[in-house]
Amino acid sequence: MASTETKDASHATGTDDTSGDIAGLEAGLDALESRVVDRQPWLRTAASKAFPPLIAIAIVLALWQLAYHFELKPHYLLPSPVDVGHSLQQKWLEGTLLSFVWTSVSRGALGFLASVVLGTVLGLIVARVKAVRAAIGPILSGLQSLPSVAWVPAAIIWFGLTDATIYTVVLLGAVPSIANGLVAGVDQISPLYLRAGRTIGATGLAGVRHVLLPAALPGYIAGLKQGWAFSWRSLMAAELIVNAPDLGTGLGQLLEQGRELQDMSWVLSAILLILIVGIGIELLIFAPVERRVLRSRGLLVKS
Image (cartoon, rainbow, N blue to C red; front, side, top):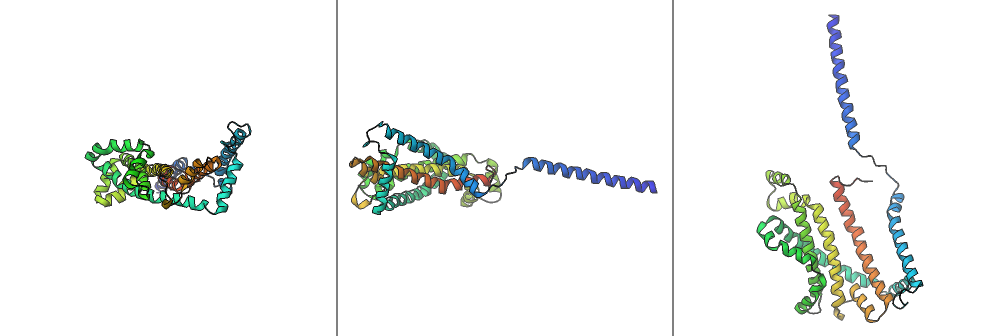
């Protein structure tokens, strides 16, 4: 009787040891798969992200100043960074600087939003309808490679010196990029996801909203980023040429005025503002959205 109880106890102990070993093995595998990221103070994180761009800007300014100092070009053709800063300061004191920036940013935002709507619809149709893809897919790629400035003369003939001309150039520059980005994103979706969506009843617009667009989001966001870049470039090209008193003065018109006056400080100030706005939109809007999407898919570890 005692020996039987001893065997039962040893059997039970062996089972417990085995389960404990399995649990320990699972914990070890989980530890191997997990990536430990030490949290850093936000000031250190901000400094580590801001330091490399600041160093790059300092190097560019130093090279610029050296080129000015050794007169690689006459000073009236290549002003110093200080001269450009004084030009920006003058526009700021006149109270016109923000109005120039706002005119272009508002035009760019409105044109980009319209491009998103049209490009998304067009991209979905091209991605899902084989006949449409065969018909206009190559045309979209060709339009994407066509310089936006090529549309300006035609748009002026169609609409005259009006806002419609500017928005037409913006749309023709941005819509193909957004549509092609969405098509590329849809092409990368696993067929398993689409079949699973149809199985649970996600068809039609519901399937597009809950299955297709979320699965194609990385490629779609890449297309949106490229679409904004084309939109901003197209807007500057249109503003450079389409110049009328009723249109107001944007950054493109400001750049053209500097060229007409042969004022290189003015010209470089306008170029600098165009660059700052483009970088700012990328860093404040698109970069956070892209990081969030990548992090939600496990492609980016939150630090």
